[in-house]
Every structure is written in C-alpha cells, then in structure tokens.
Length: 492
Ligand code: ZN
Ligand code: MN
Image (tube, rainbow, N blue to C red):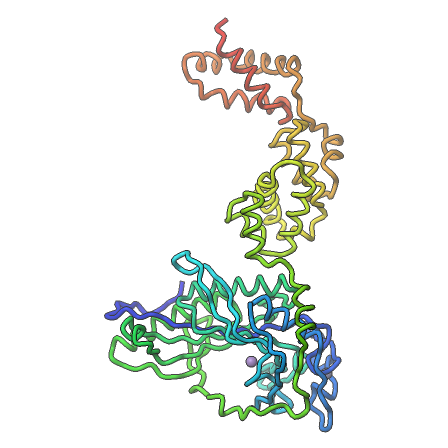
C-alpha cells in the first residue's frame, strides 16, 4: 500500500494523466552505428565505436530495422505513419551523453494520432489516444560508486521508441492497465522484450487535478511530471501518491507547482527533482548529419502485412469461435507464445476447445507455477496434450489419473501413452474385477456399511475413495459408483 497522506477532500478532483514510455527496440545493432545493441552484462565500454563515442568527424547511419519496428508499432497502435519525418537534435549536457545532444524526433515524428483500447475503471472500453511515437537513441549509463562516477557507453545509441499518449488516462489503475496492454502488444510485435528489470521499458507520467466545474469549462490544472519509473507498480503508486498530495495542496487553498518529480521506492513518495524545463531549453533543430526519412506507401503497406493477430482480436476470436470465457481468453492471449501453443493443441484435439482451455489454464498453469516455467519452453508438445485429453475421453484413464500423467509428461517429456503403459495406469472398467474390490472394501468396513444403511448416504464418497485407493486410482469412477450403489442399497 502507498503511504499516501490521509485525505478528506473538500472538493472532488479528477485526475488528468498522460504517459510517456521509452521502449528499447529489439534490433541487432544500435540506432546509428553497427555496434551490437545487446549490451546487457557486457564488459563496460566494449560495445562502442567512434560513432556512439561521438568522435569528431563521424557520421550516423539510420538503422532500417529500427525504422521498420517503429512503423510496425505505429500501425499496431492505429497511428498515421508519416511519409516524411525528420530527426532532430535535442541538446543537453550529461556525462552519459557524449555528443552533448540526443538524436530524436521533434516536429515531424514517424507515427502520430493513434489509439489503444483499455478497460476503463467502469469496465467499459476506453480509447486512449496516442499522440506520437518517435524514434530516438538511448543514452549511456552513469554508475556512482565509492565516491567516483563511472560512465558505460554500451547503451549509448541503442534504439528507443518513445510513445506518448494524449492526457486520456483518469486513474492509477487505468494507467497500469494501459501499460500492461502496451507491453503485451510490443511483445507480440517482437519489438521489445518487456523486461522491466533490464530497463527495456521506462515510464514517465504527467498528471494534473481539476474539479468537475473546471472540466466542464475545458480547463486543466497545473501539470506535474514524475520521471524514471521503472516498474508499472511504481507508476501506479506514484500516481496514487500525487493525487493525494495535490488534493491536500488544493484543499488547503494552495497551488500546485509545475515541477518534475522522481519516485522514491523506499520512502514510497514522490520527490522533487527540478523545476520543469520547457522544450525551448533543448534548442531542438533538424539533425544536419541525417537526411529526412521518406517512406513510400508501398513500403508501409508491406510492413502492415507482417503484423501478427493482436491480443484484442485474438480474445474476440477465442471467446467467439471457441466459446471460452473472456477471463480464460485473456490469460491465454497474454503472451503470443502461449496463445499459439494453445491453438496448436486445439487443432490437434477432436473435442471441445473449452476442454483444452480448462486443462491449460488449470492443470498446466498450476504445474508451471511450481516450476516457474514458460509453457513454450516446456518439453511438452501441444500434440501430446491433445493425445492425453483423447485418452481421458476414451476412458483409457480417468480424469484424476490424467492429471498425474500430465505432471509426469511435464517433468519427463514422455508422451502420455508411454507413461500409462510403463506405470500400468490404464483405467480398470472391468465390472467383475471391480466388483471383487468393492465387495472386499464393504466386507472390511461393516460399521461404515451399517451407518450408510442407517441413512448416512454421504459415506458413498468415502467408499469411492477406498476403492480408488485399492486400485491405485485406476478404477473407472462411474463403474465403481454403480457397483457401490447397487450393493449398499440392497439390504442383505
Ligand atoms: Zn557504435
Ligand atoms: Mn525521449
């Protein structure tokens, strides 16, 4: 929980929130040179060259794959793709920025005016406008230790996609859902790893409060920015904190200052970083070392054909065509790999897709939780799951044995029939054989039999359990239930 100030608001304030996300693109090389973009855990300053070290006289070259990934993302976010866009210099000075400027885009971004649907707090679909998505380069990293500051430029020049929303978000939870949705889409597109711990997505929030009356007049409050949020939870917590903090300021008759804040995870509060800089401070101007980027409509349309089926379309198809619940469909489409694995199993299985969904979201995910695994990394093929379900349907094994066999399949990678054969797990449906077991159980428990016949019919389940124990879980439960009912309900 956030340790927000306790608020008894005199006014009801409505939050107006915009979000900026910096997402690292998954290219092989950096944005403007041929250095490897895979800098994680590499020796410091080992992925550098004269271009990303900003040596005099060098020239940048645009990475086509980064442009392609940006356009792909723009199309998935329903953006207009600019046929003509321009790189710009954003000038500022910092030790991890050797050039003294960042190559970014300013007036003419690659993608603009898109949207993304999320579930609003009222459970109704909410359209979140995407103002722009532009391409830029990452900075290096400054590491402060033992009284010195060290600079590692391996990350300098890694392609970054900056995605900026309109101020359409209205709460901490909406902001959180927006980020989860965006991350899912970026991972579907294969343009970002979504790995927050490695800084693959970094978030900035801008937020202001206004009264309902101000809203009807189309007025806005003073905007505060919160920067360097490295987890979605930090985004949610910092918004909740700022709403509470600004409410206190406004209620006491004060005014909110336009500032840039950071989030202190340990103290669980926002902290002042600096008074707000404006875009004029960066002295943006068109990058003289790069030509404008011109994209033909044919090329853009060719990129469009590479778009995968996105999560929303997939959820609609899973609920519509397969008849599975929306909740299951959401879980099954959260990762593209899981969705594709599930569909392969559905294709391989002759029964209902809902049955496959039940086994995957129930049994299989429970097994994965204990192993912290990912379904696609398992030594379990969709075909083998389909084969297991067919064996349960055919009565070769009962459902409970099926669960045991699945666990064995996951840990050994063996197909189901091999496990059933090796462990002698095939279901016993033979009536004569099972009747002998039932009789033995009844003979061994005369007291329970008497109680049952005295009216305690709930003991039937206990008798079932005894027979299952004797047959090591292999008995056909329908046959056993029939035999028990017949024997117990016939007074001797
Ligand atoms: Zn380089
Ligand atoms: Mn940026």
